[in-house]
Amino acid sequence: MEVILLKHVEHLGRRGEVVKVRPGYARNYLLPRRMAVLATSGAKRLVEQESRKFEEIDLKARTTAEELATHLSELKLAIAAKADEEGKLYGSVGTGEIHTALVQRGVPIERKQVVLDKPIKALGEFEVAVRLHLDVRGTVQVSVVQE
Image 1 (tube, rainbow, N blue to C red):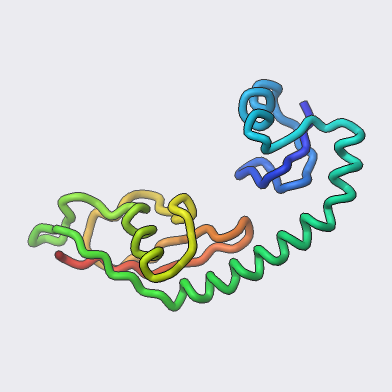
Image 2 (image 1 turned 90 degrees about the horizontal axis):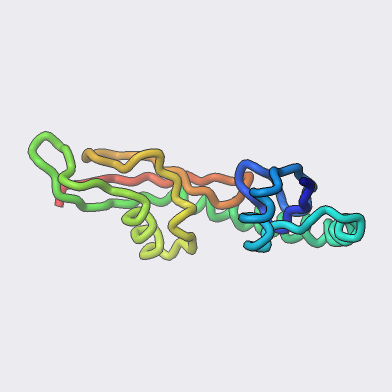
């Protein structure tokens, strides 16, 4: 089944692209969430007309994301956590704690933009990726210190 994406969908495509998906995925996920529409000839023409708007919006979002990425690279966060004598944390530092520290510093991001493969479970310094745009990722230095 062919659909036209109205929003960027991770691992599928960008806004305005015509992609082939399984009927169940389109019917149960993409269409109800208004992330896509069926690829009819009228819808294709409409998307072609609005593609210029999409490009301008995407360009503005990319430039602001690049500016924010340079700001994040200069930023160093310190997160206090309880740990034993060997440096192992009793809990872990996850995306929630990193997001909270970034918001307190005035960085306007959402929690799901913080990319952490696995929670941090030791004291030390770590580089954490932040997905700011489809093409732009920033990194922030996170120091986990003993509370």
